[in-house]
Image (cartoon, rainbow, N blue to C red; front, top):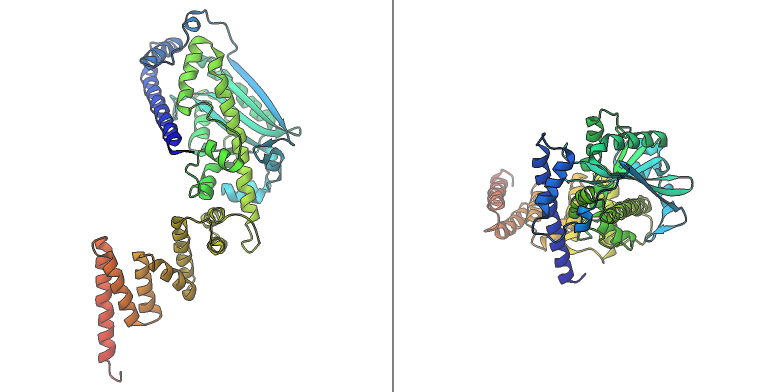
Length: 441
């Protein structure tokens, strides 16, 4: 993407976020007025947030008598298993073994499960803050059934009828018998909000307590260092190579819904339904891509064609899981590739490996990485080298030489490091003097 286009996109996203925050703040204030009906609150919200903006609902839609509509609508789409989303065959989701799902989610219960009984969940809401003032007006569910990948969307046509949506959604989930949940940031946003809405309507939430794979955490480990953004939309384009366009800025979604509630103009909602469905398909795609990447590199010694940046991401996942040995082996493999790693990632990989080998007292290998990083004027490496020569190799002259180099490098940059080297140099000099004055020396 050209710089000018990227700046335009960032401006649009910033304006959308500002718009969403304004809508959310205004709604929270209006919602506190117990003397207003839901309709009156929405009228006031649209009046206040439409000022000075060319997105007002069409005059004929405002003035036309609103047709009666069903309080809750359900939309369904399905995809045959032989279809692809981007470069990912939809059927591949069924091939992810339980131990990989368990590894990605860090929840042991997934070890006995697969995605054939999972539900992918994504919400579109009246705000982004969560809490009692935020209403999910569109609940998107995706799942495997009857040799297809199905998308079912529950849409709230009337805010005053949320109780009905909760009941219908709850019954559907019970009937389907889902055994796990897959989301993108669902542990922080979607699931707490769903549980809050069920609780407010005094209805047990059938999704509560199910094993939950929130893939956002794994995605950040795998790709944050590689791509500009870990937004689901961006990863779907970069990794899955889905032909997604920026269908609707997220910040406009609440406003469009409130305008629809007032006008009944469903053309405002169609892009939101599409956006929600694309997010569910994108979630399936990136989960499959991540799972394949991990499965292919569980054995660090195996030959593979993954680039060094991907290997670094998988290494971070194994580090997160507490498997330091596999993580270190993957980091070495990434560095050995010699190409693809940025300078920043190369530095982090070397630093992680030096810590790993130090912890395991593999001094020869740790020494190699400290010396490489010292060549790049990494102050901490001079400290590590000085400690090694002082305490392990007992080479005090080399220890003081390295510490002096580190002190010179730290001078004027880090007063804490400067003081540390000064104390270290004084201590080593004391050891040298003591060794020279000892009898028989």
